[in-house]
Amino acid sequence: MITSLDQLDMNKTYSYADYLKWAFEERVELIKGRLFRMSPAPARRHQRISSVFQGELYKFLDNQACQVYSAPFDVRLTPRKNDTTSNIYTVVQPDICVICDPAKLDDRGCIGAPDWIIEILSPGNSQTEMKNKFEAYEENGVKEYWLADPANEIILVYIRNEQGKYIGLQPFTLEDSISSYVFPDFNLNVADIFKD
Image 1 (tube, rainbow, N blue to C red):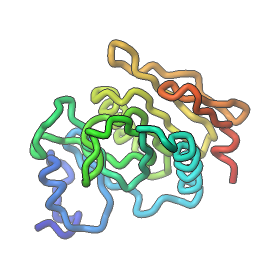
Image 2: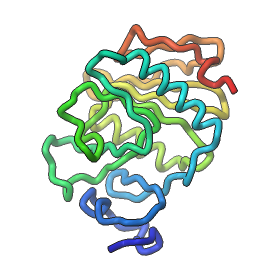
Image 3: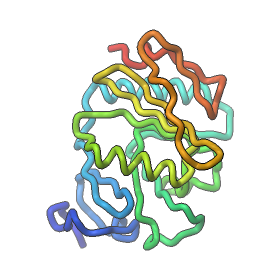
Image 4: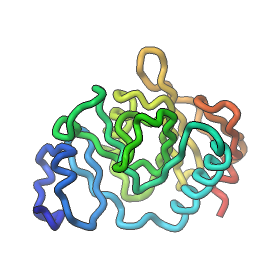
């Protein structure tokens, strides 16, 4: 049994079956079989931004079929439905995700693409991790992907088109109101998201 992250080869490819055997406290994600360390605990501002999103989405989705979840919550991505744990190579813990298909939910989290993912950038995010997550979300059918950037106080929004590729919208700044493509009635002022 693996009880320490130090026992793993960071250059090796791992599957979800491997991930289930690990018994260490460090938080990790698998993206296309590659291992990425997560921050031990997000900064206070990161947590506050996450709380704003989760609170607003929880109120908005109350009494609807869609549900909102926040990290830590395993999302197992696979382009093919019903893959076995040994064939799943991407396990992420998005800051916020919305799932509208209850068949994708089980006791371990979500299997398949959430409808909407929101990630909050933090100093520990590597460019490789961000690029790989973008590609994984796009390839696996996440319809809408938001990146909240606290350092620059902007929201980047990507919408998946009919060809399965993300289209980036103009960055949303503190003066803007932002709405969801998946849920057009959901609106937030960007200034409220980043307010301390």
